[in-house]
Length: 441
Image (cartoon, rainbow, N blue to C red):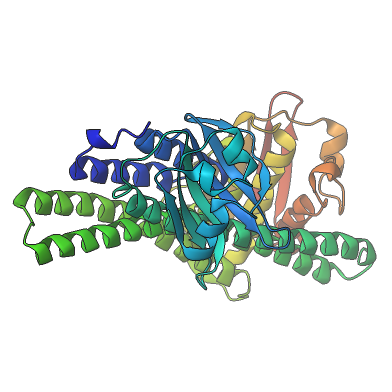
């Protein structure tokens, strides 16, 4: 079962770091699957699961459950009369043997002849139990000396992941509720002014961008939480060795090497988070400014693509920014976010099927006060009937995918009505689409 005698403390530290790095870039279901699998590889206990507490029903539902390293169907079970209730109530619960005799009412324990058990509580920001990580086996455990602190490290990370998932579900619920409200309101405001319609669509787009920005920050934040937990644990271990006078040169070198690797990983994640915040701040502020400003269009498009990462990362579409790096213009920057975002989303929704590979190319040049933008994709293209209606208000062929029919209408309005330019589309079925935009800047 548990191959503990095969590991030195240095081996266990290396394994802990590998597990931390292995799960730090994951989230949600993938994170919990990797976590239970890595714990099984480390402890070789037959049953390992992560469970979430349902206080109202007084049950625990497994988020991920594995038997001999293989994940299997999740289940829910009552807490009364189980060691899991003790674990959630008092931070941890450890039985090296005789679990079956200690919990005669626990059906799972009885049916699977469980003899050993270790459960570590998961907790919220108020240190209240919200679930647990548990390892069970039909054989006895000789010692839990290395198991408990190791599991406590990953219990902290698992607790943070559950809180992140709950926050994300709450955010998604609010976004869905808000989206439903906007859809209902849309039917009532069809006859309202042109300016009100554009403002409503702009705010809906900004709301989606906020949701995507929040989601994309979770990975570097989760990585940092894991790294901090690991370094805190190592600091405690090092302090104890110093106090006992057992600190060796090798132990200190391992600490410095492993700590440096973890810090480097955290730094890269936080640099990515910093870039996300910078891009979000730039784009979101521009949506509310009417003043013209000088921008390098290639760099600004890069910022727009970064702010749309949450939408783009679920596709197999590559976007090539071919705008010259030296192209500088003075204009209302927020207008270009709306133009490029709506063109890109139009391609994602209409030009390509879900998960279909595709390519988008964007180029531009400036000549005698006229900005020329060329946008093309290699998607499925469209026929003459669609091209004649695509800039009409509320016209869409994909209402079932949430399209409001305002995206290309907004592009047309910004280019033609507000900038005095023109936009042309050239497309054939099976040959992609190309948009040529000319704007007086």
